[in-house]
Length: 295
Image (cartoon, rainbow, N blue to C red):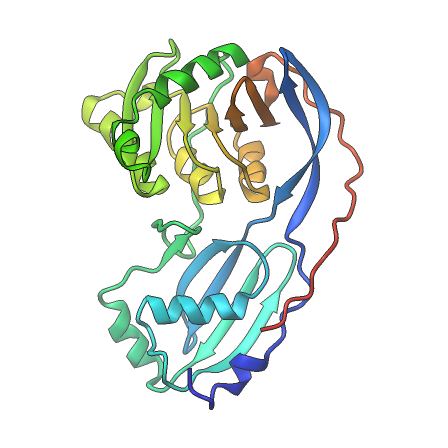
């Protein structure tokens, strides 16, 4: 970056909250009990270039200006040597916005966007449409299963990882119907791609409306939950962590969200009734330490 980009280089980010505490149900040794859990915060960062929206990224709060600059460089909106000005940086507990200015005005950005889609992403690449609210199909509460069944399906789906067994480089997604029969399975280097491929398979086979359980080898971020909620899945389960934004979306759209499904354990983050448990009593959230990030 040019030395002339001093505004972007010296701007300081406000204090941000990267984790929150939430009372969840922990399932251990065939019993579920309430427990506090630290959840990674995920929120949307809107990036504009010469007043034109170019992307909304679901990200961990902190260093938003650096993220916007890096995104613009790696996506080849700008070069690493040209002059970039920080027009403004707004941040709140729920969202952030970074506006950057480069030479060429709006016309230059329009030309760049002719071959690029404005998108939403979270760590791994994903696609979406900026500014259009998502609409999710409503789901009922007719699908129930036990933790033991979830763990049985975990082992079954892991055994199907042909690419991972040879390369160690893929995520997978397994889709099950109400009878817990496997109706689609995909591996891909990207967790979003694995999910998209599996859902596409059910579209091709005519079983897309039969999806009830989505089992993911990855963490479940907002985007993964959003993609999963585009079909009639009632339970979304991941082998790793979930984010605050994913929990909120699951609660809003009547989806059961499970995380850390492994070795006879799991965390139940929303709508636990589908696994036969009552929701935990809400607890007063303790404030985690915050960090002041400087560019």
